[in-house]
Amino acid sequence: MKKFNFRFEKILSYRRHQEKLRQRALAQVRNLEEKQKQEILGIQQDRERHLEEERQYLIGTINPQQLTAFSRYYLKLKGMEISGKDVLRKIQIEVSQKRQELIDATKQRKIYEKLKEKHKEKYVAEQNLLLQKENDEIGTKTYLRRK
Image 1 (cartoon, rainbow, N blue to C red):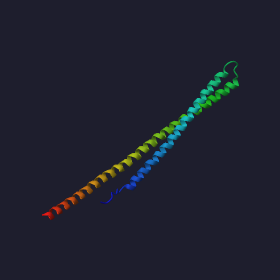
Image 2 (cartoon, rainbow, N blue to C red):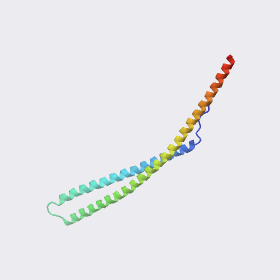
Image 3 (tube, helix red, strand yellow):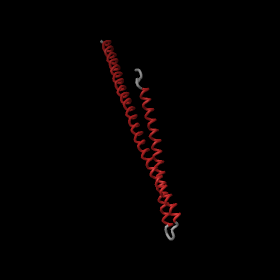
Image 4 (cartoon, rainbow, N blue to C red):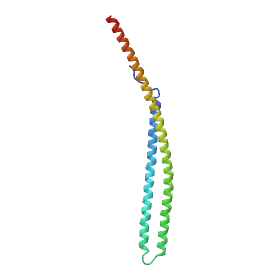
């Protein structure tokens, strides 16, 4: 019995490779997303810490220069947070695009795997039919010899 040979094995291999590339691309973008979230969280924590420090300086006499400096720094942190959130939104859009590309690549791979599976089932059925015919022929010859 000869070995099963799938005609589209190279295409299937290519589809698997494409799927792995898409997985890597998605993982890289997700890492960027996670780093951006951590950066935003750090900015928010810094802003909260800054507000607490500012509250401490507001007790007693108020230094207008220090109040202005706190105010500027607070606005800078707020601006950094807003720009960080904008970057995060763009990264999240890219994550959804990469996820969709991965889904499409997976579908393409599965199509060829299903095709391979069907071809193999057909091949096995044909081989079983040939084997059955061969066994029938041997049985018939054996029966005719005994007579």
